[in-house]
Amino acid sequence: AGKLWKFAEQEYLDCTYDSKKNGCRGGWPTMAYDYSAKHGGRLAATKDYKYQGAQGSCKGASKPDAMVAAKITGVVAVGATEAENIEALASGGLTVAFEVTDYFQQYDGSIMKD
Image (cartoon, rainbow, N blue to C red):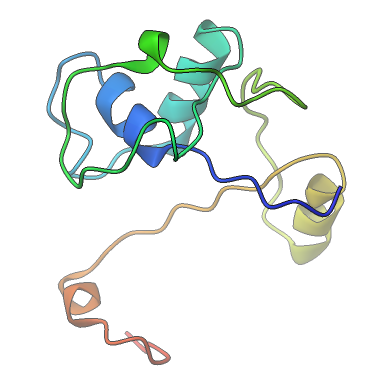
């Protein structure tokens, strides 16, 4: 509908890992989506659950649910081809994970060749 929604990364950081302090050391997007699915498809807005830059205790239940137009119900594996990714985008979001090398820590915003 032409509006860019801003959802709370901090909720995923705080709530996905069930008191294990793993959120700042990487993780899998599927775990975040599973958290939302288990809690009615919810995710707070960034304005209500501000990013802190560190993992803390989960406050998701005390924040308003900003997922009003759609709900996160889980994940679906998508093929690896460009055509399969384009097809998947027609019906929902797409998440990509990649391995971070030591070289990535030196990223300066330019095109990286590793």
